[in-house]
Image 1 (cartoon, rainbow, N blue to C red):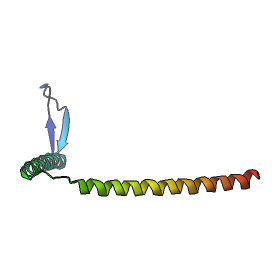
Image 2: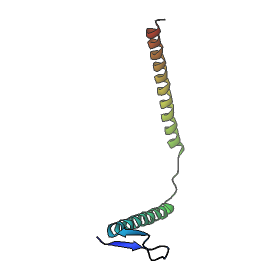
Image 3: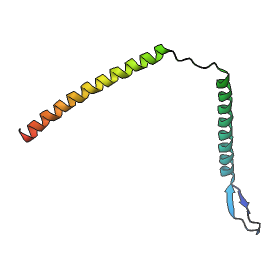
Image 4: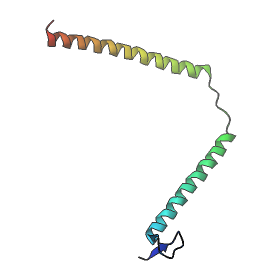
Length: 95
């Protein structure tokens, strides 16, 4: 493959070399990043036109009920784990 010699400082000596494959790869990366940016911008513009979501009291009540249930389950699990640890300590230390 042919290589491209790049002289940055102007002393007529190549400072670094870039082959064609690397040049294509760099161009593809720049294209990919630019297209992702513009797609994101268009999605943001579409989202701006959508009506705002209204969070009703029912939605928050359901979430709070789920959280309360999970807290109770974790407390039960903690008690079971504490009992198990105490039982294991009794076995190990033979209290």
